[in-house]
Image (cartoon, rainbow, N blue to C red; front, side, top):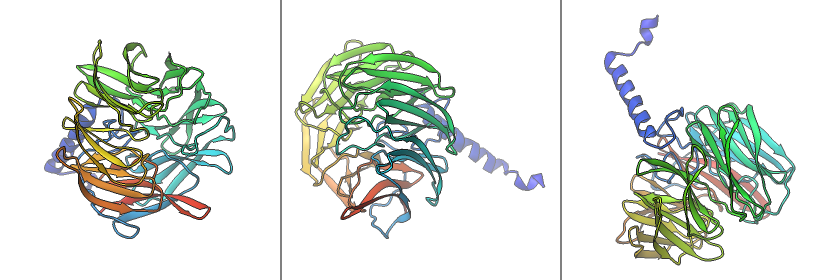
Length: 427
């Protein structure tokens, strides 16, 4: 009987080669060697490479409520965090505003069936929160064996580790938190660590835990300024760097120890979008109190290369082939030359934007708060709109791509009735 299940030598070799290629593609991302993930997963904020750029995948150009929708699953509550995709499952955070409950939900990636719903916190919604924020605005992160979620609860920032079936493995308070406009930062995975940023007006922190045991490994203080950006880890000139914008700074830390490598006065006090890069050039933008998009060199003696007085506050930027792309909160698409900051073009695309763009197969996908997802070509010479697709009437979460499927968190509002759903888009 066993022989019936053996692969032919050719099939076995092909399977092994494909698996090897997947591992090689993923291991090129710093700090991911020990993670049980596939290169086509979308396991955390802004995807595998942490920059909104996906592996090559075939996505439809057009869709609506009935066309190219493979499945649609209602999601209770409200949240602005994106879903993540790991293996056969979809995970996301949500919050029931009436009951003051915060949850993590697991879905089947193939059909959208709800596998489990885990209540993480009940009550404790202390501190003010911006009307454009939610109690579940952080995107989850997964190492392929665990799911990590971060919530503001009881004037603190809590991190919780679950297994893939929703069972709690460990939980801890990462920081006290004096809320200014709420919390939206997502967890960062690096080697054996899960790292949490908790910038707030009474004194910020960066805290790293052993992702398996929940033991606190290091903690460093940050300025006493509210800030909302998720850190990223990039390898620059052979060195892995944990990069954080905001608090009037761009800072680089050693992700293993939390030791500061360097910092430079730049950006604004409050930022939301994550840093992106072209080589050793880093880009960040902020929106309060001044409007500024900035480019700096990433080195022990960083320098400001250029500054543009353009505000990209909630959405993150997108860097590609030496150029920088963005859609501002008020619906203006931009392209800069990444080297000198020369504005190549600007185009009004309409709508209001909080979601961040992603790049898939030579197309930029970005959703607006009115439920439209626009698709355009990253062409530095001119703006080329390829399609505009409507679902529901609200999209706040950034799009996610995995295994030739696009996942969108969409809200439908009719009068005072509001409901959210996850859509799986594909051909």
